[in-house]
Length: 505
Image (cartoon, rainbow, N blue to C red; front, side, top):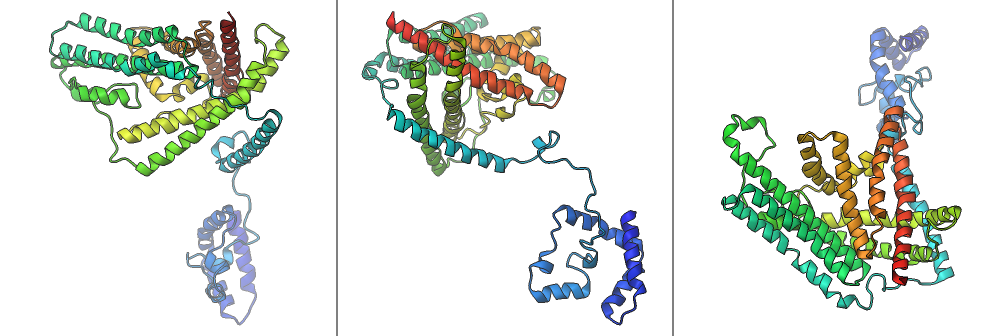
C-alpha cells in the first residue's frame, strides 16, 4: 500500500506540471488509470530489484535506437512501463533474508566456488609438501611391499583364487537338485552352509600356510569375502522364492504385494552374471542399460590407473617412513603417540579417499558399464552424514543392501529388537574386516574387530546429539575425527608394529 501511495504521489506531482510534449501527456493519462495499474507493475519491479536490478538487455545493452524506442513508448517488450522500473522510491528491502553463511542458510546454498577454492589450495599446499619431501628424503618408492621377489612363487594364492568359482558351481548344483525336489529343505540349507563356510575358510588356510606378499593376501581375502556374501544371498533368495512358490496357492491376491517375485527358476546364466556383477544381492534379472560406452570406459580406466598410482606414491613416500620411525602407540609416551597419529592422519585420509574413489566410483562403474548393469548407486553422499549410522547406510551401498536384506530384516521378522539387529550387522561387518586385515598380516589381535564394534556406541552418541540439537553437523564432525583422523592411523600403527614383532619373533 505504501508503494502504491508513493507512486500515486509521484504521478500526481507529474500531472500538475504542464508541458507541451506528448510523453508528459501520456504520463499524466497513465496516472489517471488509477493505483491498480501501478500495483500491477510493483511486483515485477520488486522481482527485478531482487535479481540485482537486471534491466532488459534491449534497453541497456542494445543499440541506441532500441533504447530511444523503448524510452519514447514508455514500455519495454515485456509490457512494463520503464518509467516505473528501478525508481528511487521503490523499496530495496522487501523480505526477511539470511546471510548465505549464516547457520540457517549455509546448507541451502551452493558451495561450488568454495569447493573449487579448496581444490586449488590443496593442490598448491600438497605440491609444496611433495617437492619438500623429495628434496629432503629423495625417492623412497620401492616395489617390495607390493610385489616382493617371491611374488612369482605365490602360486598357491593364485591357484586358490582360480578355484573359487567351484563354490558357486556347487551352490548351483544344490539349488538345481532342490528345484527338482531331489533334496529336502534341511539338507539344502546344510549344504549351503557347508559350501559358503568352505568358500571363506579355504583361502584363510592357504594364506596362513604361505608367507605371501601383503597385497596378494588382501586381494584373495577380499575375493573370498565377496564370494561368501554372494553365496549367502544366492541361497537365501532361492530359499525365500521356494517358500513363496509353495505358498502361492494360499495367497488370494498377489497384486497387493508388487515387490514380491514368485517366478522361481534356477538358471546357471543368472548365477554366472550375478557372480561378476557389481552387487551382493542376488535376483534372477537386473535392470540393464542399452549399450556399452567404450570411450567412457577408456577414460575411467585411465583415471583408475592414475589414482592407483597416487595411492602407491602416498603410501611409499609418506606413510611407510612415518610408521617405520614410530614407536608402538600403546607402549610409548602418550603425547608422542598422539603426535604420530596426527602426522599420519592426513596421508592416510588421502589414501582412504583415493581408495573410495578408485573402487566404489571408478572400478564398480567400469564393471557395471561392461556388464550393462543398470543400478549404479554404489554409494550416496556419505560425506554429509549427520550421524555415524547415516554414514554406514550411505558409504557402501552394496554391503548395506546385503545387510538390510539378509540380516536386518530377517532379524526383525523373527522378533529380534531393532537395536540387537543393528549390533548383529556390525558384528558380521567386524568379523570380515578382521579377516581381510589380520589373515594377510598373520596377526590376530582383533584391532579391526574392536574398531568396527566401537562404532556401535558412536551410533548411539551421534543419534542422541542429532535428536538433542536438531539439524546440526555435530555427528558428522565426530565421524570425521574419530574414524578418519584418529581411528585409521591408530589401526595402521598397531598392525604395523604387531607385524614387525611377529617378524622379529
